Length: 331
Image 1 (cartoon, rainbow, N blue to C red):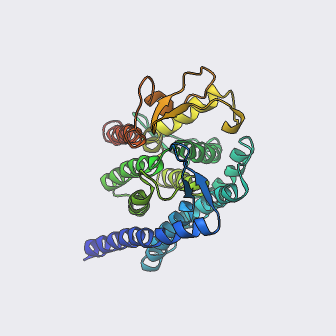
Image 2: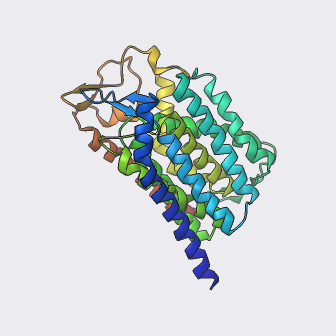
Image 3: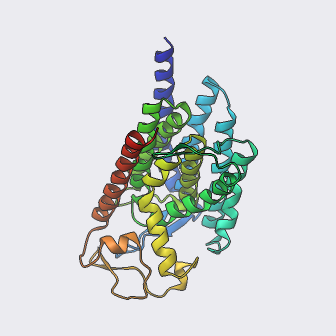
């Protein structure tokens, strides 16, 4: 009886998240055009104007589903911490979508505030599980790591959102890893969050995939990043998260090192890729920023959707390694 009730709850929250995004996204596509919250799809020859109201629909999908879960179960401090942390990151992204790009040196500082709810509510354990070692004791340094994780993860997810569908499919890979590990260890909190996120992202991907009809925007990418960081910290899945996010993190590191610090891409005249007949190829300019997309399109001309497929394969491979590491090397 208890098992049936739990299954009903998981199915219900999945359906609510999926259907709310599927049904409401067309409205938010029209809303984005109406209020002029749009962006240019720069990887198309005709440069179409696409609404970037995806962050609004993502937060509605996730929070409506979490609301149903809270009504059926309870509002735990962990759920409250995740809601608060992700809402703060979403707000920062929304401000950026509306008012324009925030200084890349200021943005990480602002994103530190997303970690405050987790720290204030003590929704973390300073004893992360590490491969071969098991539980460690990082009482003093762990809160600092919690603070640092939000700017790192949020910016990494934001930087991967450069092609139609890239943020959707790479994020699905991440939450698939979290879901599998949660099932293995019967961890309720990360299981419910990953279920909701997979439903939300799957529905969103239908509209966000090539050719995209809606962008996630900065609000969407920062929101997803904050949910990732919160789930890893609160669910004690730090190692799984880091391995699953390797393509995101490496992409961000490539960008920072090649641009010699936290700088806006608008300060660079040279782009990492060029567009020829709607095909993407890596720039030959040595001064151009190094990105994952530039490396994947090196010496070839490739369609945007094929590039996203390659990025997705990398993400799912990292997700597989994350699960494998947890099974084989974690106590």
